Length: 356
Image (cartoon, rainbow, N blue to C red; front, side):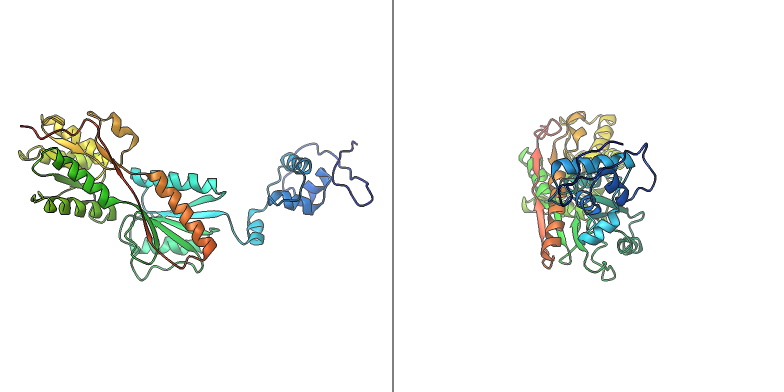
């Protein structure tokens, strides 16, 4: 039996401990304390990250935890602290690039603050599914909730949240019932349309996102308003579903419009399909038709030609969502408001002056 330096007991004596031959299943805090030669209270302080423990003792306790395969009881620790250090994220779709990048940014920012993320996907975007997701929050160990919900489902009076749970909403028309963080959808769309008008195009066609989408609605409204304010008649709106395939189908239609020299697409993926359709129909981009997207996904610079687009700062949206919900937790969260993250125009080779 060997002895190690552990906690000093009153009177200057030191405890001894016996090395375990191998990790044991179901090791307890008392087992860790015995192996480390410290008190259970010291083990508790180390596992909860509390101060008042020397670095040597902390290292000694952590080594004992590893040797025994001990994992602190996070539920019990949360009850003692009054928090779970976990944020719930509700989203109805993981198929769109915007939602995926926003979720990634939320998870990254949460980790920087020492929080984990629990994902609650809504399989079908219906009121019942949203209500079910909110109801499940009461059964999960989350401190607050971030909702990525780009469709109009949060304004219904039937939606109710577990009491005391703070909420921040990303990318939604949530009214004044929630704190909202969103990209400046309208500002980005205005910049896209003005860019094409400044290049001398008589008007700008629009390939919009799905009808129920808040972001698609904001972009379409801004497109129409910007053209009207410039004294141009908006062409018929063409609608897609955010996918490259829907952009391709729309592109086949737009390629047959002889007056179509400029197209603002509501996202980059639809723009990709549109470029393919125009190429197949012999309409050159940007010589015959200028195309601008929205999102600035990493691949947009590698399109043929590289895509002019509106950059969305998804990392900033995710960061502000986390900052906002943590602030509401600290301050009680009585007030609501909307924060818009600015966009910027990224000029590449898919837009040029009007032909002729």
